[in-house]
Length: 327
Ligand SMILES: NC(=O)c1ccc[n+]([C@@H]2O[C@H](COP(=O)([O-])OP(=O)(O)OC[C@H]3O[C@@H](n4cnc5c(N)ncnc54)[C@H](O)[C@@H]3O)[C@@H](O)[C@H]2O)c1
Image 1 (spheres, rainbow, N blue to C red):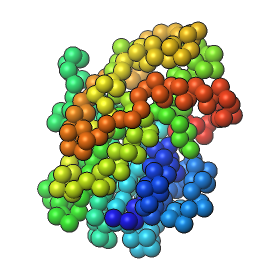
Image 2 (image 1 turned 180 degrees about the vertical axis):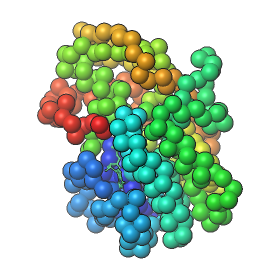
Image 3 (image 1 turned 60 degrees about the horizontal axis):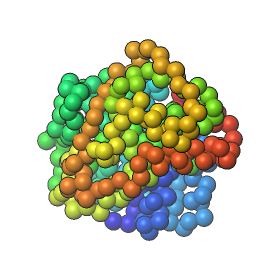
């Protein structure tokens, strides 16, 4: 495979994935409606293997145009209304983009002769664990507790039903951990990034649900996982689901604070009670390690270190700027 289309390629994960694929020698077309601008792509502009189409995945004509012009052999589908708050704020748009748009893109890509379709789902689909002492894996029941995760589960179910199967097509579902790390399209509304920003800026960290578990993974490792999926034998990955992360990288929020304290001993924290985010899940990543040999290259302390340096050196300017958040 040579030609890869990355939807949402201007986003937090997408811009890192785009850079990694270009480095591997792929021709990469980013398809994005630039909801957060296109500055994240400027560093790729000089690369003859990079191209860009401004378009919306909910527009059949935009999608038909890019599939016709670029004829991708694989689609990495990252575009979406991302996160619980963003979906709660624009529920109709979230359903249209994350569910209907994804389904229509999937069908159009299949019809257009695309061979592989990688879908970015989320470990949020697991919701709240029943047994706090155990781990959920790809066979566990999905129990979404937000519209965001509901839209992801709807698309997953659609892809995995027998009636849409095509032996010449290879869709793969990746359930990402919560991401952290520096990206050309920075997001400070992600837990590790946000906590580190608050502490590095000397502000008091306000925490609720400090006992809740969640898996975390560096954005660069997502790009590595996607590269593995692109080159894997189709028989090993088609119509299958993989959690992306590392079983040792499940943390309670309190554990994240303890990690940040190793870098910023003077941090201040205040615990508040809020029934806002009932997600609580510890995830096993044994399958992706076994089937694809995937191992993370960075751990949460690496992300804290890079984020702290970037903030202290003033690389972001105003870290509170609206463009660094999804709502
Ligand atoms: N960041 C995380 O922790 C995380 C965790 C699990 C899964 N994911 C998934 O990974 C994907 C990327 O997430 P992200 O953190 O990079 O988000 P992001 O918001 O930074 O990027 C999303 C991109 O999609 C584009 N987009 C939005 N609507 C579009 C539309 N209708 N048509 C075309 N482009 C559109 C935006 O302009 C943006 O560039 C999403 O599908 C998300 O659900 C992210």
